[in-house]
Length: 142
Length: 194
Image (cartoon, rainbow over all chains, first blue to last red; front, side, top):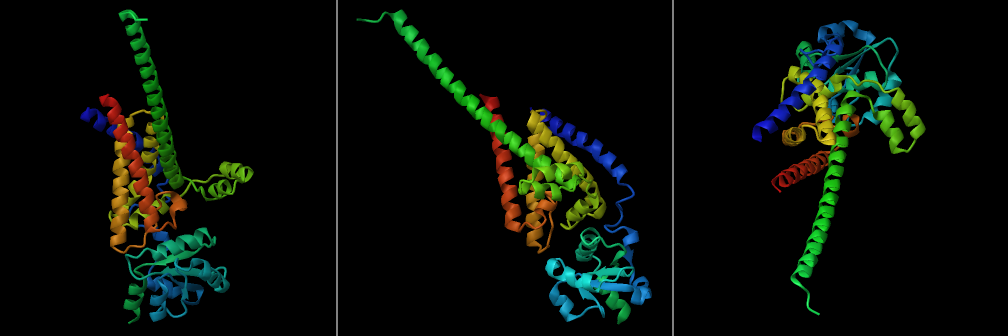
């Protein structure tokens, strides 16, 4: 009885594997298995600085961290106050400019989420996530 | 007037048969109730699986506001959701490396759908129940661990529908589903022993 229970579970688990594998093949170009962010959507501090006036910096960290310090000229846009902050960002956004989103460090998710929402909800293109976030920017600018 | 032994036996038989009929009717009613619970849980897991695969936002908004005409239009325009979103949701828990999050993002929705079909059609039923109970225990432990570690997570358990759920909301939903699955599992075992 016990083995048949396990057997049933294994059959179901194996059945689910087949379409999942198919889906993985279908999406092979749309998702990276190495990093949460596709390499084409990442930008290093040096690359972003080269864009200089052609880039809008977006700070995705909480309000207090932004108030404490931020990249000069950066605009606050975090998920805590998304509905209030998005119109403020869109008011200064200029078509053709690149948007660079950053959060605290390499391990934070906020910049990834804000970048995703800017692409999806605000339909913006040229939105990049800063590799290493605020920590990386500080290192290069000390 | 005295009853003969045969007449007594006949009365007893009628009573026994009436008792059996009542008991059968009771069992039938119970069976129907358990089947309803099967379907409700199957619907929950079908929705959980499909909401991770398709962008159901517009469709759900229409159905919530009873705009069935618009819902039909949005149903025809249903677009496939990017697995990156669900993979990011799993990654937010900081429990597994990114490649595992990606693999789970492809695999978990299908597992939920197959288990839901198992519940619905009573195929591989005990296996489906066991897998779903295991999944719910793991999900509940994962969201609790995330809360304890102070992670601000978007679980994505039910796609965008659950995006802004609070921790108590998540926990209550998970525990309710888990309790219902355990009830189904115990009722199935009890029936086997009868």
